[in-house]
Image (cartoon, rainbow, N blue to C red):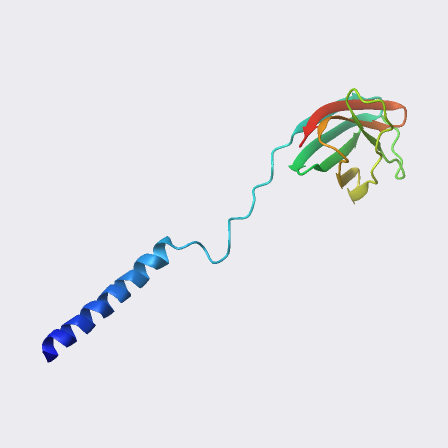
Length: 142
């Protein structure tokens, strides 16, 4: 009787020991999900202006959150001033309402970022310009 009891205890211990190793390999990571990859740009813009090239990438992050990365590359013969800032205007396509002009956050010389939430989902157009010259691109915001 004692040998059966000892054998049963050893068998249960072995199953628990083996189960712990199996669980360690198949359990979810304690760190949570892997870090989210940088989303692909929803729309891109690259336009040559008289004083240089303006490049922008629009990221629709979901839930109407938008990020716009903007860079202005001065032409070799262009007029370069430190206080030149681009103007940005978001407007809904086929809607007759005023556009949204979110504030630009300077990231580096000639590089800015805009991050904000659009008031409604749908098809939007962003106008980006330096001085009197503008370029635009359309995108969908969900």
